[in-house]
Length: 85
Image (cartoon, rainbow, N blue to C red):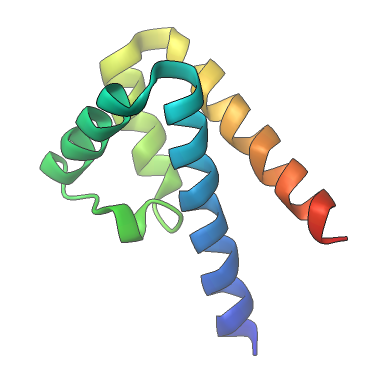
């Protein structure tokens, strides 16, 4: 049961990150960011489990502006869970 909860949470993080990227920057930037993450050996399926690594890559790419993307992803995650409740 615990593994299911963790997998669901990680999948939700991936969805929220993807949605946030597309909403802020558009589909082309989202796709490019996914390619950059893959180049750093972070496949889409592992974004939720390795979000700290994702944040490091974002910082390399966007500099201090990456904090906005990370913050918006967490807000999206929070709002997603509010919809469930």
